[in-house]
Image (cartoon, rainbow, N blue to C red; front, side, top):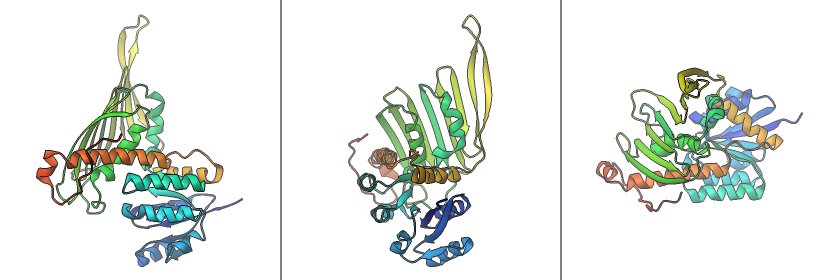
Length: 331
């Protein structure tokens, strides 16, 4: 049996977990890891008995596929070099710093006939699989994604750090194009936006209200969905939820409301994500989160950021200079 040879580029918090899961997956051989912090790379490599590469070319000559978990600002040059070498890529979210870079990555992957998957890991949360069959014509969706403050990750705004997960998930519900967006946000403890709220109106008529914060006293990852005759509530962290739906009598009148608990598989979403990536590389299975969807999520996030950065609320609380993108909505 052929064994897929993989590597991990960038072994900070996320990349270290990628290395661990690849090491556990059957039919996959973790060949090595790479990081600008050579001591960190050596420590991870020693843990799994693999190589610690000093440069990217050494890595690419030994692998079929890689996970790229470097800072977002260098996603484009790293992913470009991987694709040019004929290596399949899973790149962490957001796909790139700019939509232009992201689209260039997608175009290159298509020309080179390589898999480009984006690490929107929440798509692989098993609780989503439990509720998708029940979602039909939602009218309102409420998303909350809150975390305690940590200096790690504050180099990017909370919209790109946390909210982008919910932007990607809600887009996957096939609600049509986004017709209108309202957004507000504020810097609190870092030099980037720490709290943001966005209200999206879709072509289908559905409205999604999203709140993301990294200055919460606790951790919260929840989605609530309302549609005719059904209410869904899920907790991503607990991988559980509940569904309430109307029960009608033989005459068609409402007789009661049935509440059904939802409890999903407890398998780690990262393992599901990397297994899906491996299937796409080895068997040609459809990519669950292809580069095109990473571009769309990034574009929407950038449009939300443009609205926040030009709002009066944000300008009063601005803690550090930001470039002001065009307010023109490109959705």
